[in-house]
Length: 420
Image 1 (spheres, helix red, strand yellow):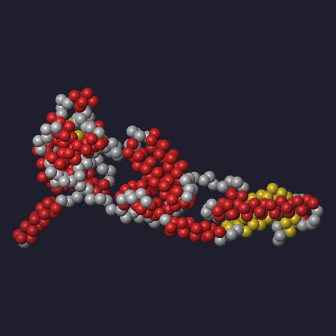
Image 2 (tube, helix red, strand yellow):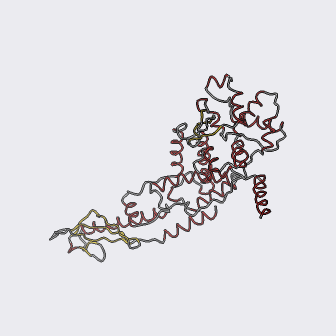
Image 3 (cartoon, one colour):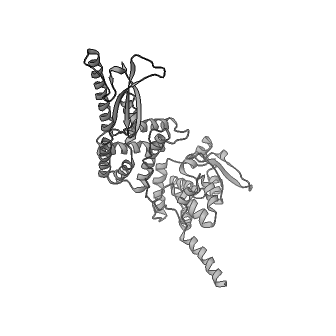
């Protein structure tokens, strides 16, 4: 954070060294023959010029081109020179304003500042508010409530960062730079105690706003161009086949636990997420290319199609809830509770099954990807398709090769060398 302040003040000093040259001169028209000529102003910065009318005229014979002023002591000449002096003072004031704002000084920006035509200022937090309002309006039509919650949390953290680092409630987007991004990351990890993965999510949300600004040419350079996040994804938990069998075969006397266990196991053998199994309708169960029952649905998160052949364990669970009143009334395949209750009851089930892992409903998706499919030689491309992933790299985050699979593969290799 200290580095970002030092960089800001360093840039301000650099800007202060960028000076300008102002010249008043007479501009004669192409067909000029005689009489007063228009007085023009020329601002030069680093060899680049910006020219515009001063709004006055002067006879060429009464004009000192070297001094850029009128010649003589008559009242009209003194009035003209006083006016030109005032224009020069205003240009100097405009130059100082650009310095104070930390803006890039060019002949064009200095001219626009002088003429009151400076570029419209856009502020980060205001853009975030507009973005979040758009997301909120599209909930259920491309966005989910949890997505909006993440953006709102990012905005809250940015507000805290701005207050602590810059002592202000908002900042012009033109002041965003590499130091701002790295400073925000440090703030998230230190002050907010965010993990590397969590901080990366908030940084990603900020990057979306920045990319929007770059796309609209509001930023001349991208603050993220040299930024690289070093956060490593956490090792994803999953159930082994033994743990999965223990949970499947466990006799549970409490209906609510039995119901949650069945839905969890169903997702372990189908790879459906909580949101997808909750909305899954009976009409989305159909006959696949092989003549057996398949799930034909679309992922709520990405709106991508997902086609999943139903394994025997999953089919048995579906049959078990075929006559469930809640399922019949709402055309649902399973009576899914709230995510909060599902996770709470899963922990009870884990204790009853002597499973020491912290169970959450999403762990079923990891189990499907790792234990049920990949460890049984199902190609990762097929797993990716069933999970409804857009990019196979996403599947690789779920797919952890089990020690058992490594052992089996190496055993085959040992046999090959033994025969040789």
